[in-house]
Length: 179
Image 1 (cartoon, one colour):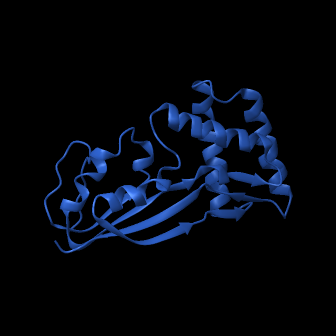
Image 2: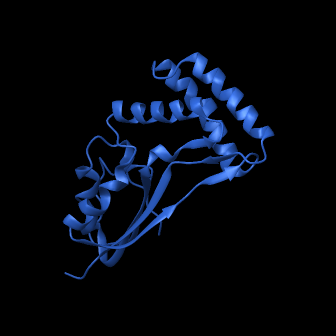
């Protein structure tokens, strides 16, 4: 059975979940306790929590062309922090879950990278275009950087040795033990 909840508003059923999956949620929250505190009780003994959250946003880059893209990545992180989030939240989650009685079973990096034309490159190019407008509206990235980023992306498309690297995502799997 698949259930969807507003984790900050709706109480979770007690000891019913075999799996709770959380992707790109914790990084946007100003306070993690409302998300993490009810989690152990919501899992059945042996149930697992699976998090896909970022560990190292600074890896976002376009190589070898990418000075404006690097500034974009820094602006993205500033925007997340200004909104109360933490773009590298998975640096803290293992310890926070262990403190709540969950056993950390696995920590696995999930890299996203690709050469021009790959799905990864297409996603990152689109993200720069779309979120770049938002960053400009927030005053965190300038039009000149946006124009330079367009030129860097165009140059990368012509360079068979260029490639994108996304922010490092960490898969974190934790288990509730029998009580």
